[in-house]
Image (cartoon, rainbow, N blue to C red; front, side, top):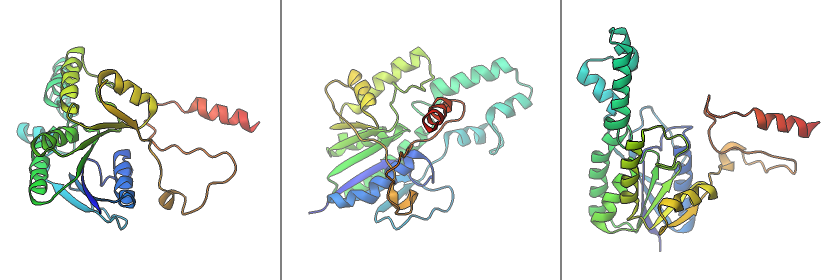
Length: 266
């Protein structure tokens, strides 16, 4: 008997975002294990052609927080807030404080928080009209987990929270100590009702265990779809390297890897 799962993910239609790639892969192959997926996500900004993915896709309305702010204060949509403030001769110190206010208070717990209300509304409609056996939410953004947590509490459906990036333990976390303390409390509260936490590596699973010691935590590594990336060709018997993530310019240094490969070649 096929079971039904509601998958909540902000990212799905973005071509190269790892969040989209991971969730599209899940949707594509989960049917092989007896599950019928329905995806709750945001509407694509551009036309997007899915490669014959057998899934129901529900797109909820979403007003970007930054664009909403620009509209309220009369700023241009296609230019950054910071540059427009500086061009209007506002002092750099004022701009810096405005950025801190935005990052620490307004965009909490992430800049996609405006998606919470419309996504929750669509989620309730789905759960009241159809039977679902499980919920899976994936972050970042963590707003996906906020939606799933509320639905879990109201409808008592088993929930798996997938953390592609860690939440407050993220190595790129750049907020203040006060914000981190507040957000750590939110993380513990939100994820407390999840049956299982998943992440992308064993070391990250161990880190999650530090603040969620009573949770079942499973590492499910990122992968790649051979039907897409290597055109159905088998891997060779030679040395192959596959990086299933994304290289962030200015934050990752590939030089040691490349130097090591050159040494192996010689």
